[in-house]
Amino acid sequence: MIIRAAEPSEIDTVVEVLAEAFHDDPVSVWAFPSAERRAVALPIFYRAIVRGALAMGGHIDVTGDLSAAIVWTPSGEEGEPDGGAFAGLTGVELGRLGALFALMTECAPGGEYHHAQFIGVRESAQRRGIGARLLRYGLARNGTVPAYLEASSAESAKLYRRLGFRDHGAAFAAEGGPPMRPMWRDP
Image (cartoon, rainbow, N blue to C red):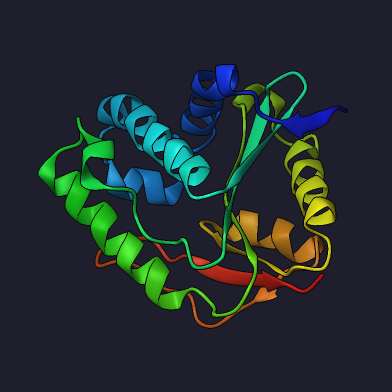
């Protein structure tokens, strides 16, 4: 399987992959409760995240067939993108996201690390180990720098533990939202 950096011309596809992969994720369902609204809101959300990550010196890896993508950001860059990046989201949605971003920033570790912010695999390609290979690729590229992420489901936390991540503090949740588990991996 080929894994490589996303090309600028592939950003729309990366957004599509992430929106599809996270459509039924507990955090997505909490932030955007209606499935119909989620189909509209998630592309807006992920476009802002992807653009923000690249603007802050982050990195996006994809599989050669564009069935999966991972968004990496440097440590200290957990803050939310500027409000205009989310044009098209409702005030309630922005409030939920703002609360979640604040908690993520509060719970983020200090020091240098790479943040695996989002790892998504198209539904038709899931359960084949693609996400694990994508994550391993980034971990190898990052070399001697630790990695951090937040697991948004018990299932994803199990995968990350198999890849050497360990719990890093208590799970956290925005009011009314599902728990997110902070996880750390030493190089």
